[in-house]
Image (cartoon, rainbow, N blue to C red):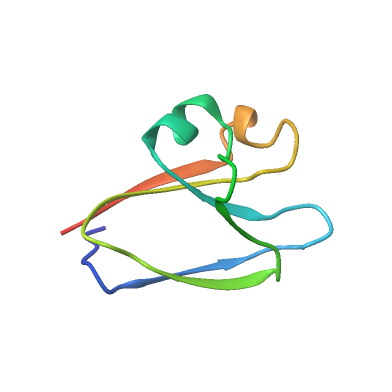
Length: 75
């Protein structure tokens, strides 16, 4: 799928068991959100993509390490 800057990703999930962290490449690789990172917890989140790489992880213990993360390149 091709994504463009301004496209909106929708994350739907059970907020009792999941969340979505917006991280940089380092946080993505390490599966760790930095201090002050945006963490969505509503269970129905909309994130507007910026140009370039956009990185998202599940910030619950063990989730990201189990490959619950996504990197999206927006043109």
